[in-house]
Length: 325
Image (tube, rainbow, N blue to C red; front, side, top):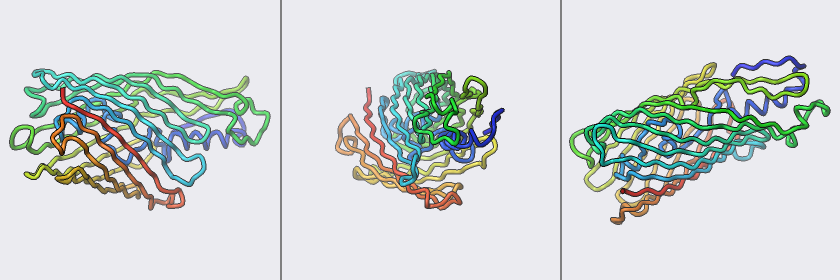
């Protein structure tokens, strides 16, 4: 993140600190997730939902709540709501449509965004595989709640007036998936790349004379994963996420999930940033022969990085509902 200002540094120090916290550590400006597969379409507008790949459900809805660094004052919290429809009975080009709402808050700063998305899957049959190109578009509101700022200069107008900015945003992505060895019940390989915030812009929070400016930069994501299905109805899913942001280290996030023959699933993983992940949850409906399916999931992070375990643990809750139509 690159910043510039024409005011004394001490007047803007706290605001700078909070903005850096809101947009993330080491220039990470987008929200983080423990259970990435539950929010794949938030990051990559071309992605096919895991509900379709793993269970054949072409209509999906979900919501998540993430509390990061619990125990640390003004720590980030993130909430998402998402939905997807995949026209699974089409060939040639199958359509996906949906959208998501995301809210992220860190102390006195935060953002709320609403996006619609549309993707086309080039495929002979969506159940066998395809290549998808997707676009998301929407608006994001950035905000600073001045009443929560503890200013060094009590007369600073920046700190006396709540400030918001509304900006357009666009995301792009590509995604592929392919059935290996047979029809839908067999194994899948999948992957994709995306830029969920294409528009780079300068956010300027200012008073009558001067301003503080922070630049919003593009984030680049890569994903590769595999579904290995077994005869007893269980499956194993290893996956790797790669994230790159200018002026920040490349981050690798490796995960492994196992869906048991019963409703329970478990998972574990870790990242190059020094974080370990654990997750568990239930899939209700599909395992007892129902067409509708409900998923309840919980994810837990613990950091061993230089930022330290003192930052606190991270907890994430996910709920999903999907069905075939």
